[in-house]
Length: 258
Image (cartoon, rainbow, N blue to C red):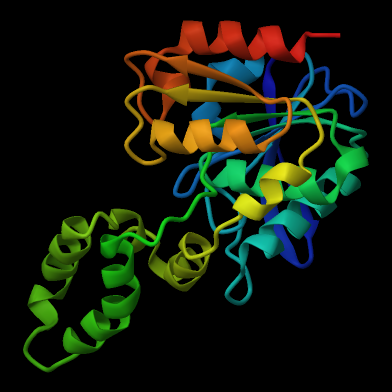
């Protein structure tokens, strides 16, 4: 096992938490990008099995300060670029889960010569204009105004949770100060970036993923040139936690390819 060392770095005035393996080598790095509402160490023991890994808490999550202003996805992509640059990392393998996957896709499509290969784990990025999402975007501000009416304060938190759960947007209510950023992120479709990814890419998906359904995986796989798709039965959105042994077998087989 390779111990993970907790560190901090300042990027664009933000104090950022990240972790490095004991034997970290910037020439052989695997960089992990976690999902929305998550943090670096949710990848857990798997990080310790990698020779040279870097995992950061994205701004607003874990031990990192929240962004100054309302960021778009591109702001997170630029932040990751600066993080990689400051650590002197050369052509890393980038592994992104969910929201972290959408960052990885945009990064790999814009910095083709700066990535060795990419692993997408239940990746976000396909934003369908579903009825629920349209309702969410239209009513989120209205609901906020309604709950400011005098006398409704005591009911506000419980009522808001019920509303957002009903339209399948619990991530929004859990976003707190990041709620405006969340609304920007979920409204941005990055499918046009898929054909621009030219690095070897592996998609690992849980067959029972409800957050980013298997149909998204198949569409990404068709659109990203030469990509491979591995589907793990009996696993959901957090496939690396649901089926760790099978996930790690597929993951390490890919990063160890010559």
